[in-house]
Length: 152
Image (cartoon, rainbow, N blue to C red):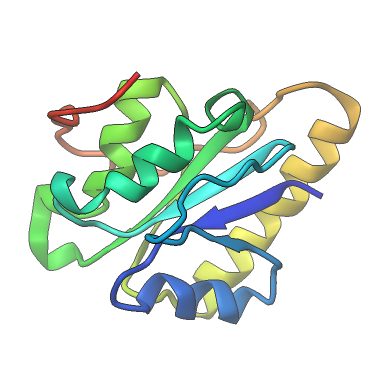
């Protein structure tokens, strides 16, 4: 099974993860350095860059950047181009595909779609090292600006 990691401050992303019933690692602000040790999907809310230090520390820890195979972005569509901005920025910076975008804490359709994506990726990574080409990216990517202080 492809692993899942997520970050949340307000709790909405965690509410979505709980709805999926999938086991996931929560990135902790007090100790973001955690080695996933396997291929994983990162689920991210939309926050300003300065609020994402823990996520950057997590991604750059050991092999986490190498094992990241896809992103799921959450946010509020009322914020237009800022919707799912964190996933968009990390995608553009690291050339990691965005697998799915959802609003706020998601709905039943989002839960089903994300479970399907995880299953499809789990099946494909069991047969290869890093195959995410079978998952269709979301249509609404929008404008992307790069993380201002991304640490390599």
